[in-house]
Amino acid sequence: MASSTQRNTTSGWLAWRHLLEHGRAAPLLVLLFLFCFAVSGCASITLGVVQGGQLVDSAAIAGVDVVRQGAPAQPKHNMSLEPGDEIRTDAQSTVVLTFAEGARVYVQPNTHVRLGSIFVFIGEVLVKARGLFKVKTEYATAASEGTEYLVRVDPDAHVRVVVAEDRVALTSNTAQWAKTWLEVGQSATIVGPDLLEVGRVSSGEVEQIRTRIRNLDALVPNTSNLGTAALAAGLFAIGVGVMSSRSNDGHDSDRHPPMEPPPTRSDKLR
Image 1: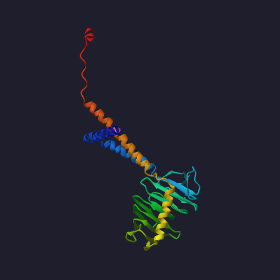
Image 2 (image 1 turned 90 degrees about the vertical axis):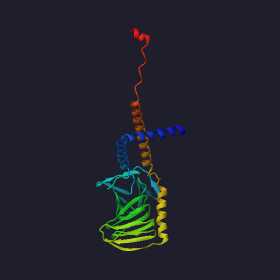
Image 3 (image 1 turned 60 degrees about the vertical axis):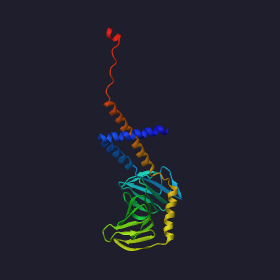
Image 4 (image 1 turned 120 degrees about the vertical axis):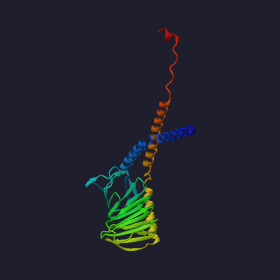
């Protein structure tokens, strides 16, 4: 089995090399990239709902409103969401948004957000990001890379950002103030377009944010990257198979056709 795998891997690499040397790999690579982009883009954000400390896996979920292009959509477990979708949670529901690249946003009860770069109209979100990620409010944007933080928007338009891991870059949407970096244990308060205060929070508040994220994480299977990984592996296998086939066809076409056997005595008598 191991030798068979080694032969297939070697054959695949030689096929890639053969096509690269003859300039025939680029069209296939482009097609594979476009196919991968189209498929992965179809389900880049999925929805989960936590109620009463449990993940709800029913076909129809109450307590959460999803609005798509101005029309209500029935929320379901593992529902694929799209940029522009709006989500509202009631007092008993927390929505878990899982992104294909690994980031998660925990939309807390009594919160209203819009997808894309997450835009918070009102309420609170907890963010666990594994790559470049942004949360926007009316007057400020919090950007991070591999961190955990909280963003809260109060009814009076006060915005609070608290960092629990790594750091967050805070910028003004109207260029009212310079970019501000928040480290672990720091918070910022924004009122309207003005950055009102940057200060520190207690270690207990930081640990509380981390604990809330861990507890929610434990309820939702970590399957965000499985589809992408399987797709990538599948595309690679398909690509190698196609290229290997074409390579073999090319080698076959380079070979001289077999010579015809000499006529037999019976052929001469015909």
